[in-house]
Length: 388
Image 1 (cartoon, helix red, strand yellow):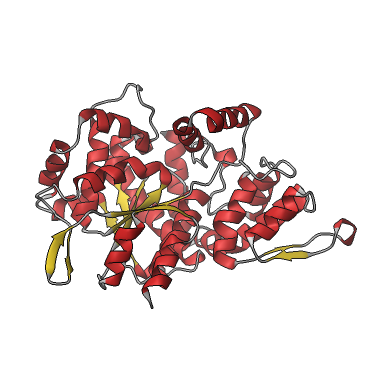
Image 2: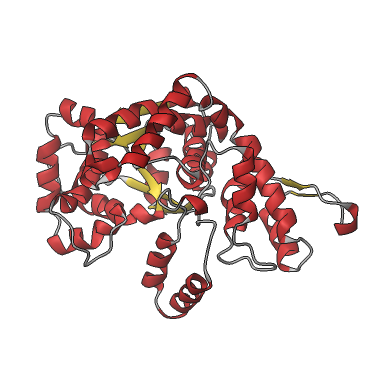
């Protein structure tokens, strides 16, 4: 596979940015055997944003001939008070539920689940004798104010009262990249601040240095960051829309924070579709979703089409009665967008088509969690969430 094809796969939607494309192209041109990772907190049930958006990007990266890793961040989840801050429970859910769910999502998005390495954080730390030296090395090359600004990667806000362990979290997230020796750090755009730190310290640290051979030279390099777009939650209020529009006009940094605030979240189950939801649940949630006529911006249903449907399948079939225009098939997001903005496609017809697409894609994931180890793992997680 040629360099341009591989580069385009990594750049394809849902990718929003690459830091930097030039660095990535250099490694591809020199034939470096690239390694990727994406890390996840173990914080509850997997929804579309975590499972399908990440799963699609991982599948694309696999097709670009890059080795892929899913990092099960048990210590990070413990630090960030997930699942009752019980490390034993977090590790059990990571192994029995989360890792399996993510591999199934990669498969649903056209990837190879058997080519995904699952790495538990605590296992990485036990096996890497220089891990904590790397943490200190990164910390010595990063200011406290920079770390405090980075706590938004935990879903926390600047100025929020936090325990000291949460300040260690961003430094550990950066150290994970070097301990894993990956060239591509991948995440949603909300994790950008940690990856920027990783690039800033990449050529300064002395432990777990990331090195590649370019020509005759063995060089210490910065990791490359690939950030995908974030899927919005299904419900937006008029207050949300007003705040987004105001920020878009006056404060781009605030807009970024607001977009993170409205992302699909497991903590707001009515606004999220979980990857093992029943067809009836998917239809109900999609039907109740925010999807104003003719409006593209801040429309979560259009976002699903743009970030998932067209990058994967390149088409969307909409079955509707003849009196409403009859069945229609779109072969690009731009075609869909134009008809929707011009009022030629009704929100309900769009919702029905998106719900049908999700039901079909998620069928193998849903089937796994209806029997055997899958149903046991899911029930255990549900019980934890109820009692904790």
